[in-house]
Image (cartoon, rainbow, N blue to C red; front, top):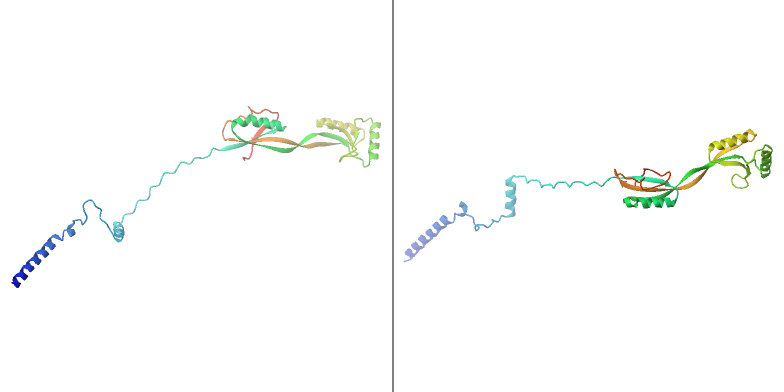
Length: 224
């Protein structure tokens, strides 16, 4: 009885081993252990090994096309003037305001000739100056004035002339009477007014059609 039972168990065990050998080898022959449509999971170490074994170089990232550079419009700057009075400057600024340009006003000083002075230098003292004036009377040289103040005190003025030719003529007349007359140009610091503008380069900017004024012109200036 025992032997028969042992024999049956051995037969069942052989059947089980045979079934395992027959059916358990499907995975080794390509049957996937995952359900169809489900991706197979890999360990991180397996992914690194797979990437190294592939030997392919990743494609460089695509570069976006460079954006076209937009350059700011070039500008040029003008100085318009000089204007004789602040009111002339304000009128010009108002006339050019509609052009939409950037503007600034400025004031400068310039040396301006006021005429040519003919004179006899001061002899030293007031008494000597009066004595010199009497000699002019004796020589029939008129139109003189003895200066009584200022840096030319006691000098004898013989006239102030706008035309240098007239000043030279007067000097020569007094010199021919025996007096050492001299000529000195008289100057004065006077203000002048300017208007600076920033305009688009190449634009046909006709400021002359809007601004009126004698002696007003323009030239290139440093931009601000």
